[in-house]
Length: 498
Image 1: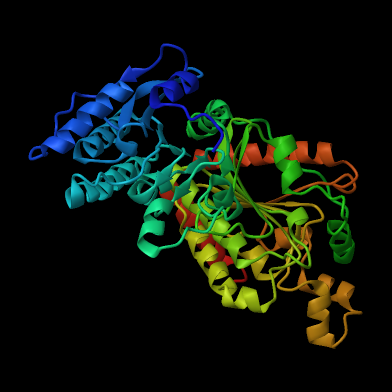
Image 2 (image 1 turned 60 degrees about the horizontal axis):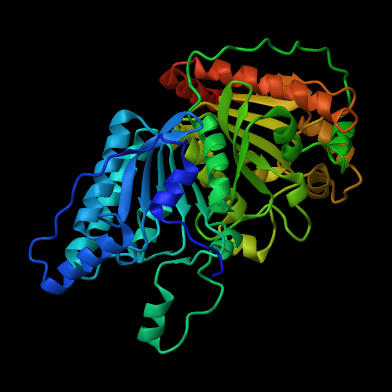
């Protein structure tokens, strides 16, 4: 651990606008019943650190935006959480909720303060309750896991962030390695309890040094704090007369390796964009991009099937759909619109996918989308094959690129089932009504964005048109009454095919 670690005050001074910090901390007293040894330890910690407890709380500004903060001080009895510490945290979280402020937590802690025992241990539940109530109010909660963050802090309010970032080379884990070694007589495996390893397993969204955290927080809050009402609605992209292109031609065009996908869409049509990473449950998931983004004035959570991230060796897997469900939860908690991007040759067909619950994850994505209370917009961008595509489809509005398509199987697979040969794939594509024109006629798609003549031939111009359509649709959806919008969504899928 060669990096110099910042104290709580140093982090506050470096992360917040100059002279903007306003302490919320009330004076603390020693716990009733504390013995002389514990009182001496508290007094020594106060003298050593210049602070009176293991957390500092208050409000400040990040590039002019007021935020609340809870910042740990490890030098104060290893950042341990006693009853007074927890009460300070809870008071700050509840005040942030009352004042409608985004909350930033920067813990560094060894966990429960052993001198206070079980009573202190139970404070983790109370701090979690306060954070949960803050999130239930639709307010952002951002977490920066510092070195070290272990024990009950990591297992409670340290693991509840909408966006979670770890400090480089930080020790982050449930059980401290020293405790593990003393209990088990052997060292904990090296390299497991690090921020970098958590990132590799989809448990944190990034690993960043303190000097880069301010920029990330500012750009994230630029999206999350955008108003949801009263947004200016941009002029719509004119509808165009579309050529009667055969279905198979659209299928082959959608498979061009240079066709723009979700990565380029976010690059050219959204700003700012905050990539998120994994399920927060130990998986990354192949072939799914998750991000916070703003299309013009309209903020959104974006779920996109990534054509570059799906290969024969690494197809869309159950973890990708669990990443998608994380995005749906974020949209609900943050009261943001959800944009889903469909572009997949199909979900994984393998033993691992079956044992990983692929079918169940498709079903749960469908259930979550149908009931999601926030506005939903689906973009059918390219290939739309099978259950992997269907999992992201049910939405208030569905728009399609001209050469996008949707089918229960790739046309070759449908041909193999019906005709025992793949040679009739073009005929099957036409018969099944997979192309965007047919989807529009059947009420599956609401509008089509033209390609001139192919998105791969004019990627930036096409993505600019598509981005304007996305913004126009999102602003329109935000103007609708939520109950009527969800009821209309439900009725939409009841009527298809009827």
